Image 1: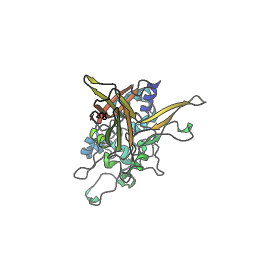
Image 2 (image 1 turned 90 degrees about the vertical axis):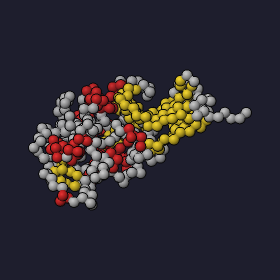
Image 3 (image 1 turned 135 degrees about the vertical axis):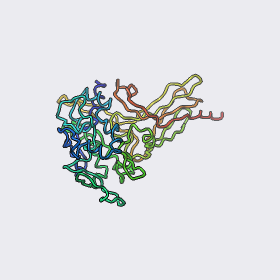
Image 4 (image 1 turned 120 degrees about the vertical axis):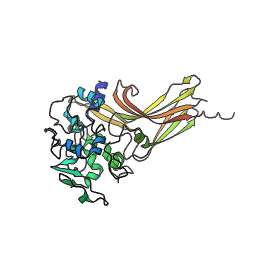
Length: 361
């Protein structure tokens, strides 16, 4: 049941589109795209094929990006096969009507150009920068330039929403809350695009959507310092780096592993590990429905720090190796957090702390 629970959590990561802002960004109201039940017609200037044809650089970046593969990615395919819910497909395959039966090739576009940009028979875009002349940018379609589209609210539909059991709760429980975390960060005055769609030398934004598959971006998100506070204990302090939300954010099964082990003459001693994440439990209602509750959240906060102290066995008078890893968890095999199947690991920091000198006698 724990394995299934974890997979169901993964399957729901796309979530129902429920923006937290009073006025949702145009085109992000939770409805399926206007192309949801229509074939992608390359002759239609508002089709995804037309977007890629007329914007080849952006199209090439989007192809293979986390947005384009949001449905076809292997881990999500495993989860959606176990639990083929419309709830999940609303964000992972928004170009397909979520009420249609699940098929292996449905949603091959993933989050498409049209998903974010097409609204009411026009292309939605951010305001032009002052140095750009609009008359020099002819287009075969209408363009609506929105101030909101240039803010974090443009991403709210798929990156801030509650669990699907909201109607059964007194208070909604966020399944993802990245937009709220961003509002509490020191980068609240910047958009998500500033980090995840950086501009090139010509001012053009990248459409590769760098995120948790980008080791360099991950390493820039956290600052790590370590110290040996006594002969057998290591203190690891983590502070937010160039990141505008808690770390890790979004997916419930993403976590940091903080670990340490004594360096012995013939290898390493037993390791000590702690996992930083949103930690959940469950409870059974009288109706027989089981609800998931958040027990505590010990991720790196958007502002402040997270301090972890690890007592390391067999480390008296010996060096201690330590590490910080970003882990993508496919599912838990048991109730033991360490007993998890991983679908990706990135080492963020690590090193060896010399043995602490023995006090004089």
